[in-house]
Length: 339
Image 1 (cartoon, rainbow, N blue to C red):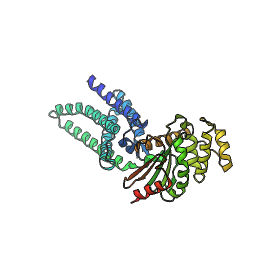
Image 2: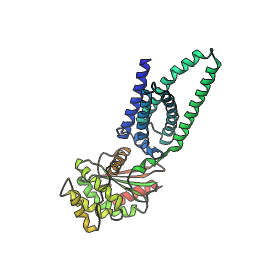
Image 3: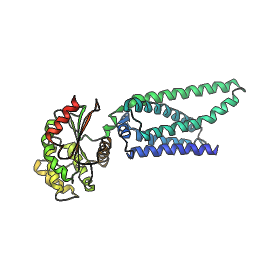
Image 4: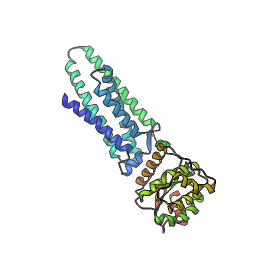
């Protein structure tokens, strides 16, 4: 009995740890990156998982003091089993890859459900021959569990939608935001090669904006680049029409300081009639997590890199370095993935 309790606690804590790892984006596989694009009614799976396992652990610890807690625990565990089945089917048939963290979370849920139900099944089998009322109670409880399982499955399957996870990402997208054609421009603010590629990028962006969704992504090869990311995100959100000009001004500032102050940033953008508007910490954090997801999704480990992708056909062209990242090269890649 005591061993079973330790195993249940261990499974719930393991599920919590895996959910936290998912929220921290510790998994670097493409399957994890793709799974992060899905959410449950706009709430990231990792947040749902953290809340679920904390709730389940509280209910489990106090189930002896409050009889209702034991019943609620059993219901949410089997509801989660149904939800996890939906998530497994999404991974198999939609994502078509297996996210290690997601599979691990599902395993902890099913293991906890097995442990919690094993003893009850044994007790019911012992008392089946004694009284019919025990059998009827078993049927009622089993029916309720099946119903909860089915509800959990359909709620998760209907609520899990790709792209909803990006609702928490600030609106940093340029061009046609709903386009299946995506151009990710991944650079580092202190990368010499990125500086050389900037002129080609500046020329091609106005053309790209008419055909695709354009996303500028900060990849901090140099750690000091992180000091510019909050400002870059702010201008992408608030100054889309003047972004290229603002970007040139920021690029000029990188030659003067590695740790820009808000006053220094405002000074360089003031001639453009632009006011730097700070974003909240949560907004900046969401933007940086999105950047990290893009980097991992396309396995980018060098800058500058331009990824041209067709979200519908999954056709992707990568351009790396100054020689490949030209106006003609980017447009050719866009035409290639469009077909």
